[in-house]
Length: 253
Image 1 (cartoon, rainbow, N blue to C red):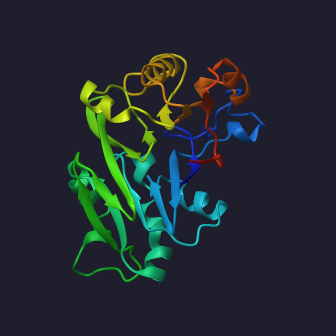
Image 2: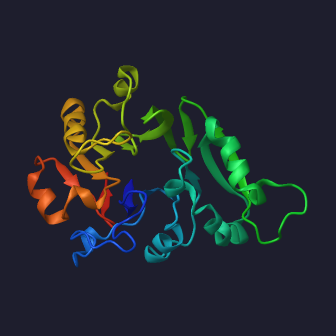
């Protein structure tokens, strides 16, 4: 399986519009971060986890011709606002499967009403097959997908484990029984927003403690703000098995 980091930034991306923060002014390409998303590829399948406002730009950059579907972690705009940009895939291949926690179905119907309406439908609107998921395993192609449930502040959201790879973003707290699903990982992707604590995201020290507890073979930090610091400097601070992810990074399992 190949994992491509389409974006590794937090909700505003880096650089932030109008910001004069040194990280926002950095000329290092690894400090330029679109909103967080990953692309997973195996056999003849290609799935995306989350499609934020930068979805179109990310898929053009990676020269993506087709996808088999999108998994959503939760409803926030930086993870969902690119839904309209699935239109080329729908026009080419018909309805696109999307997988989302049952809790956010009403939110999607409200925000993307034109996608789901059955009457007076705009002919160019995206067309989807909505698959609601609960905290139970399900299949995508030839892979078993194991949802991981945790809290992003006060809201419940999903991460996903596929084989020995797990993708958790916007995590703040998690129950012990859900942590058990994360044993024996080859690769863990986990959010690390900034140096100082945050009410709804792990900060760097919390993310490193979480990694140390789970002991994956490798861990990659994502959903990063400018307040974490320069990529080149932060990477030097990390344990040998922990890496600061960056846009366009590809990892193969």
